[in-house]
Image (tube, rainbow, N blue to C red; front, side, top):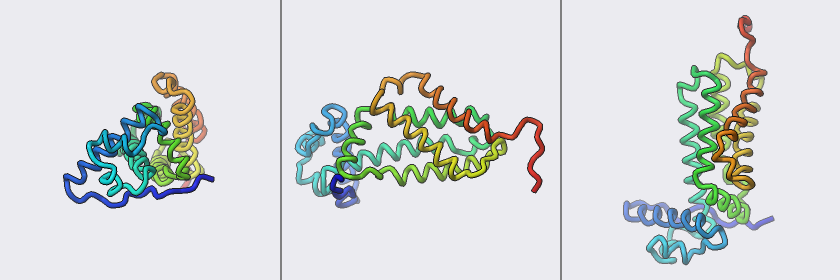
Length: 217
């Protein structure tokens, strides 16, 4: 089992100048992961690209892994924000196909935006023993989807929590697999179409029959 190293920042920037330095370091790390992959992304290269010193880098990040985790967290935050927009108030009344398509599209686009960086982050976090790094984000997304399944009048899901867990992991698993094994599929409309079809086929089993009477309360 890989030895887990510290992934939290050493300190949080409190001034705009310090925040600008951290932003430059994180952006430099992102660029280098894209260009050279995990093995070529050294702290010396990161510091040079960010226009700072290695010492300054370590003021904010205790390890190289902590810096990689900061890049990963920004990717997760962007994904969460994109999916949360798709789970807004309109998702309660919009056609189910439109809602599912919007959510799958958001997930695919977030992963397709920078597949080389995404793949590098997966590799680096695994080396750091942080295989559960995205667990909190996935749990948050599961809660959002669960709320949608409960609130939709056209669905009667027996166990919304289980259904939300399965749906979130399905989309996350398929997009991750595409990033790692077949990134070219992420740019193909058929990929999104087929994932949407899978989800709709499953949800259709929990949709009330047309003209059926509501359950007696």
